[in-house]
Length: 96
Image 1 (cartoon, rainbow, N blue to C red):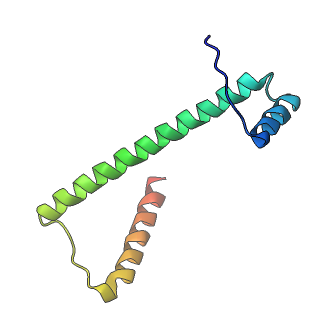
Image 2 (image 1 turned 180 degrees about the horizontal axis):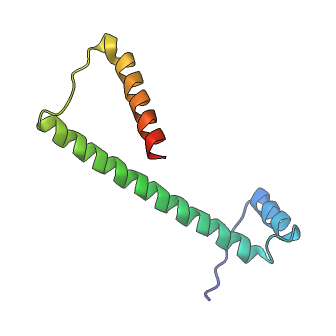
């Protein structure tokens, strides 16, 4: 396994030491590997969210282009959003 030197702030050093001394990790390398696993997972989740948003945006623009949309006046926007929220909540309840 390749060796890499890293520079930690005093706070980060103390945190690593505390985690090792607690017995949760055997050494500093385990702490840092766990941190990297968490970053990797966060990156995976963020990429999935971005992909879902891109797909939703693409679908939305396709719907607009095909005329599948509802025009809502500014003074009715709050009520319309509330109705959408209620509809979504009902769908979640029936799906669960």
